[in-house]
Amino acid sequence: MKHVIIGNGPAGVVAAETVRRHDPQAQVTLIGEEPEAPYSRMAIPYFLAGSIADHGTHLRKAGDHYDKHGIALRRGRVVRVEPESQTVVFDDDSELGYDRLLIASGCTPVKPPIPGIDLAGVHTCWTLADARAIAERAGRGSRVLQIGAGFIGCIIMEALVARGAKLTVVEKGDRMVPRMMTEKAGTMIRHWVERKGVGVRVNAGVARIEADGDALVATLDDGTRVAADVVICAAGVRPNVAFLAGSGVTIGHGIHVDDRMRTDVRNVFAAGDVTEASGFHTGERELNAIQPNAADQARVAAINMAGGEAHFQGALAINVLDALGLISTSFGQWWGAEGGQGVERCDEERYRYLSLQFRDDVLIGATSIGWTDHVGALRGLVQGRLRLGHWKDRLLRDPTQFAAAYVAQAHQAAA
Picture 1: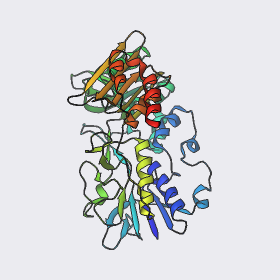
Picture 2 (picture 1 turned 90 degrees about the vertical axis):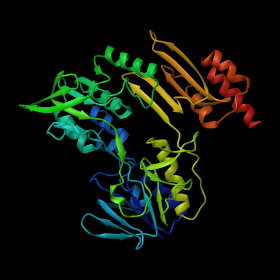
Picture 3 (picture 1 turned 60 degrees about the vertical axis):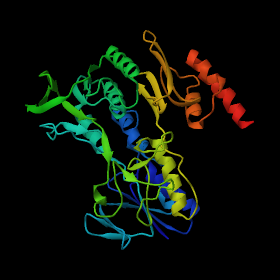
């Protein structure tokens, strides 16, 4: 059996290892475009900050790991999938046949249609090569303009501050991390990072970028001009699916998969950030570029590719962010549900915030800032779909009792 996996990020690596465990005699090939060993994009900010070297980003640290597990690494860019002949075609016209194919090609960064976005000195921060280029220009005292204050933007921000850069962040939304935090929580994070010396402009965009000698000048929507030595575009990502044109694989916002991670094309599976899978609480298709989900999907896909039986329970938002020392989390359907109930507690002076969202007597979403003790209980309540009974009313009165509610209801569910 020939198993071919397109994409050598976390989902691809987990899938390859899982296939090997469940099908010891199979041929397993893991395809990646970059000249690096398989690495974690989530480690790039730590590399940029100088906390780790290249090797520290690698998903598996032992140099012989893939050889020992019988996983062939192939470098190349896939430009086409041909399901009828069960082959993938590379940009050099070479081909590779498969019996089972997993698409784990992840996402690619979005570049907004801003005049000047392709000038020298304007970078995304998505690859190790990007990080190396940024590091050459963003040293102590360097002026850096960052477009985007989402989750990825915030962890890049942390690295730039660690490098001693003078940073300005421009965000189209009305708050920082708008896809992870409530309005109140996102605004609190903004105030925190501003106190740490980062300039933040929300409800703002970049109209154009121009070269000015060795520097760059960005003009914002309101006419404000911001000079920078380097501009970083962290304006979001989109699933990497262009190479699937003509393959017959159904694509909405991402690749459509069922709960076994099968596409609607025979012997073709998909996992990770590239998928549009069912949501944990809604059951509706959604994009959810979260590494824990990617790993879960990869395991499910690999088991089924190897002839086993496994089912994905649904994509669940799991976010933990350290924004210059302020810890925030969001789990599940943190924005709430139509007809549901919610409670919010906020202590702005101490940077403490808690939001719980319920459907009936089940906690479906939670957001926190400044909570580190027992915060995993929030994830446990959401992911466990625990019925809260009388604890719901107690939490509506005092949401800080979430850990006690988890212990009580988890014990009851196990009894």
